[in-house]
Image 1 (tube, one colour):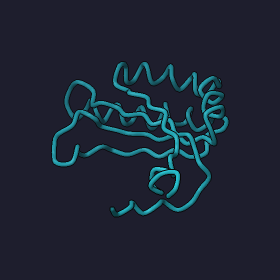
Image 2 (spheres, helix red, strand yellow):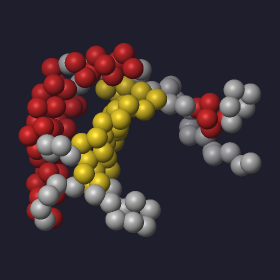
Image 3 (cartoon, rainbow, N blue to C red):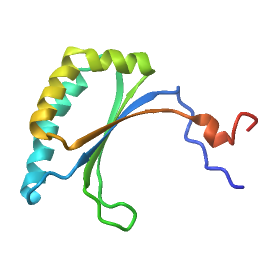
Length: 125
């Protein structure tokens, strides 16, 4: 069985992955969400202690199908305790308040941890 090529080696991280559904309304509603997300929410997120990297994507499709997801964001932390501390910080709490205002009920939050053992094919891999 072929194995997936591994990503370049980096320290294991814990990622807060957030998926955002498209807001009700037309393209203008999505543009407003994106503008406020960029201008109001992300600057607060950037001040989060322990945050190592942030990546944001526009979701274009679900492999050949339409999707109600519009944006995805990944925020990397060194480990779960660093993520938990970041979530309790004043900047992240402020970002959460803004997010509840600009995207009420639109976000799904997932905590993902690196699993390099899966790419190696198990413990003996």
